[in-house]
Image (cartoon, rainbow, N blue to C red):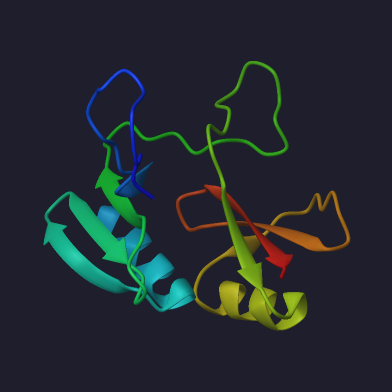
Length: 131
């Protein structure tokens, strides 16, 4: 959503995309394309942009040669997660099974009954939760 006004008269800002670094932008984009049913809107050798059918903020993927996946739950002195995606679903069991089918791994540690934590193929944690 765009910043409708700035009290100081500054420029407007609109969040266009959340970018996930990974070892292979195309492989991770394909996972999220299948999981979310979104379309590829832009593609380069090391960069892919997905958008949902209703528009809004997209997901982008950038290949990084030195990518290190985060550890979850967090542990001292190792790569920490810096963000995770929260994805609303109607049925946790059905959505979780589909996520695994398209390439996710369910985390061993599950902190809540109404949320399921998974890892995408690059190791980023994401949560499925009930609407």
